Image 1: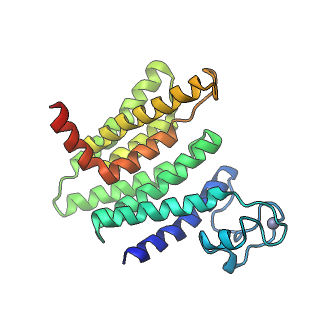
Image 2: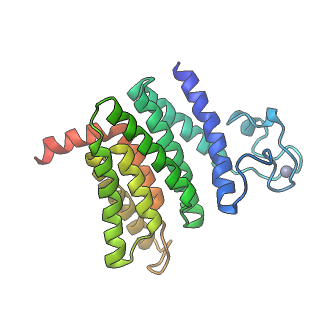
Length: 248
Ligand SMILES: [Zn+2]
């Protein structure tokens, strides 16, 4: 079963690459079929096997020999590993389904933000609506659902407040945090925010110290929120437990 989940993750990862590449260009994610971005030749199905095709083709297009970025393969592997890890944590449950949906959207959001510094509404509001459906289901079966509403409001609200007070972040960041909150609930959502500030702050300080970026450069924050949310969906309970033991 684990291997099946991993391969399923690789295939979804391959589709996420299409989304990351096409959504900023406002192209359809369903049509046309995959083609080489350099010579426009349609890529045959046997050249579309995640990871393996890239290795067999030695990272080059079969027709024009243009280099194919290793990032496509890394995104596939990363998605496969996240799916497998979520499966090992949650088993074949509704929580597993919920978190593979969340992390898939976050991989797309994080990388598009990294590439373009833009967050696309379709990549945040579609999963927020899916999150609302999960809340409806939890309410229906009588489980705690308020925490997800609070998570949505608190995580989105904190960033909204930061924007109104300092203009230091974008509304896209507020949407990503609200998305994290609606899937993770209140305590894990707040943990996600804390972690994203720690990761983002550390990377930002490193980029400034090594002069890779100057104070005037815009450093997208979305990738760190996405990273933090994925970490929390896997290890949130352990981190909270450790925090309670250490500091309270
Ligand atoms: Zn080509």
